[in-house]
Amino acid sequence: MTWETVIGLEIHSQLRTQSKIFSGASTAFGSKANTQACAVDLGFPGVLPVLNEEVVKMALRFGLSVNAAINKNSIFARKNYFYPDLPKGYQISQFEIPIVGEGSIEITLESGDNKTVGITRAHLEEDAGKSIHDLYDDYTAIDLNRAGTPLLEIVSEPDMSSAKEAVAYAKKIHALVQYIEICDGNMQEGSFRCDANVSVRKQGEGLGTRAELKNINSFKFLEKAINIEVDRQIDILEEGGSVVQETRLYDSIKNETRSMRSKEEANDYRYFPDPDLLPVVISDELLEEIKKDLPELPTEKKIRFIDTLGLSPYDAEVLTSQKEVAEYFESIIKQGADSKLSANWVMGDLSAALNKSQLEIVDSPISADELFLLISRITDNTISGKIAKDVFKLMWDGKGSVDEIIDKQGLKQMTDSGAIESIIDDVIANNPGQVQQFKDGNSKLLGFFVGQVMKASQGKANPKQVNEILNAKLS
Amino acid sequence: MSLDNKKVKEIAHLARLNMEDSDIEQATAELNNILSLMDKLGEIDTGDAEPMAHPLKMSQRLREDKVSEDDLSEEFQAIAPKTGQGHFLVPTVIE
Picture: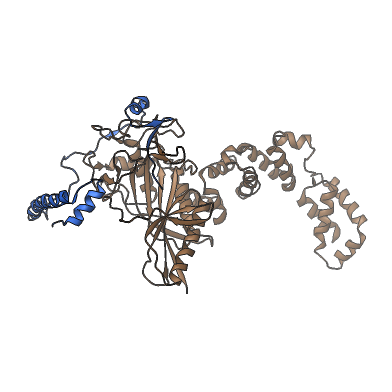
């Protein structure tokens, strides 16, 4: 039996504002409990919410970036439910008319093909506070610093058909919200959270019953959670059972999903327009202003990297998938470095070294300017690409600047053809057997000779010259 | 449209109202009276009327994104039923 997986994602991205969505309390992360929860956030009687201008602008930036229909009149609604970290007894959200309507975004699949994922809507809402269950035995502790923090909930169409696609989409949105500077993307601190709606169906049939997976705080777990849930649903269906529509928590330690406290009654949020808030009207002028202010988007950047820098689509995708990586790469290119060579260094040695030390590119011990200098020393023939790797390691360990290291270690490339020739003559004299074989037609042996020469020169001979002179002498 | 006792009981539960069966009976009758007025309103032809989300014909004014609130947590905690280490404490919520 062939089963098809259908996935839609709901992404909550925390907007990067100074103050909350409806109050002037600070949104800074990590402060002492409840010191950033004001009377509005606490739901005191008589207080009124006043909408933060920046929140509206950020939602519009997102909407314009995914070519979405913008609702010029959007409304806020009350979503009613009881929970201790929601002091008002309702969450202010958007229901019938969200600020951002239908849009789409293009993702790149593993095969290299592109796929368009539909975005159903993106709406503004306030976050709830935090319930801490393990601080006391007999109480749940409530910290309301997060209550009222602005969120943009981005809802996708059920357009993804594998966990990998879902991750590709989530990463794309993650990159986008950082490019347009509306969210810091910090998943550990909960600034970017994914819920996945997962269902399976027999090929060609209608949609199956879905389960909603919550509590996923990394891309790795998103992939694992979806895969494990798909397996669970297929097992149930193949045994003749049926999937229950429910919310399930992903447990990353046990790598399983499990039902949240079984809800006897379906959630009934009784949405209605919030009488405390008037419709949000977006003027054409504001939209125009925001459009003008948008930076180059990842997809645009990728196309430019391919078209004007001559990078492969794969390289362009990798280099634009994170804003900071793209900026690092571009600041090397802007100084005149070769694009392909620079791409290889950023995606190769630099990326590997960062991974090994678990560092982000912004914390790289080697700055873009320093890497540019290193690359320039390859292109101006001061050192070979192979030696450059050693220099890179020394730079990484803080052993000095590019030129200092090259000088001190005597790594300067040998370009004096007389000197190279004499090494080559030695190599030829010392390997008469191989010379004969080469002359008899074993052309593969050229690599052997090049290797011997490089070894004799301690890697410093210019490889291009070595090849040329060798070819001339052996023919 | 009208409600039966079962529906009213559900609504009372959603609103966390603790109501006796006799109260439910009365509430159902009263709510149905109100709903019959709604039905009356429904008779009006609103085909040409623009839907509205708010009775005021105004739009939401916006606030500059600035932190303007001081930390009044001590005052707020002073009137809370129970607090500890800066947290509000509530009966254990079982996840």
